[in-house]
Image 1: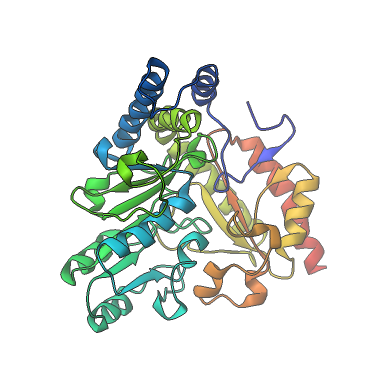
Image 2 (image 1 turned 120 degrees about the vertical axis):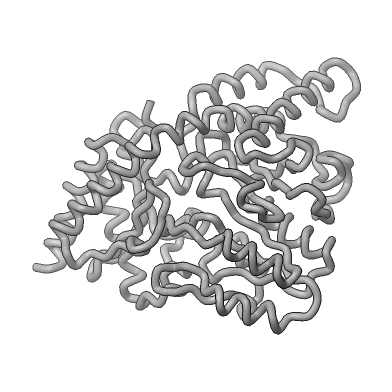
Length: 374
């Protein structure tokens, strides 16, 4: 069932519809009660539900359940990694690519942001130069998939550099889950952040996954939950839904080829009908569901409002900042001129996207280009 009967929802990178099995699991959990830290039967049942979900999330990313820390979402998971790993390892600095999510960049000084190329890929040579100049251990933050462009970062190569210079590496994988296979052990990163609502779960549930043997300092204090790594009573319904979404992720991956074809067909139609439009990151590996499109001469705000009035939902930039529709820091870091960046929108597809949704988007969007050219 679509979010509304009349809405063509093309903003999956902001949040996704709740999967039916998630809604069922959460509804059942809401009929129960019990604090997972309580020792009576209701508490033990709640604890079992949390641990069952932890196993499911571990299975999703090929990680041991005991290395998963449940959080309130991807933002908290990133904050816990960047503060907690850095504190535990006594890191002298946190380095990050200039196109990271705002929840990462908020913890990184401007001077410690590593440049990217015109496609949005981190400059590995620049990263190595920074690592050579730093004393003591360093924490590197590098996302797996960019939330605005879908561009996949060279995480494997960054891990090699991290190991060479004794650095730790945190990977924001929030946008990748449900869109590409995930394997914590194969990535070999020290920590990985996840968010349930990006692949069919509820908002308010996320996780930080640690590599075995990695130590972390708690950021939230006051209780012994999550093996004393994150205080606070667990969000049991959200965590149960997270587990249900994790079990359903394989089905989403089975649909990924269909979604990619829809995206590619849409981009081909844009290239044929509006040749002055620009699709960012198209020359490199991207998530199969994401297009970041600039329409020079037509502001992002105008495009979003016109589409919204016609029943098509898209966004500009990160959902965490799109309410103010400022030029995307991701595009600016890629060398895009501010005026062009202000004309960019993000179209992100998902499992309920159908050819009719793409046709509807194009029918509304293409006349905007004609109006601007007139």
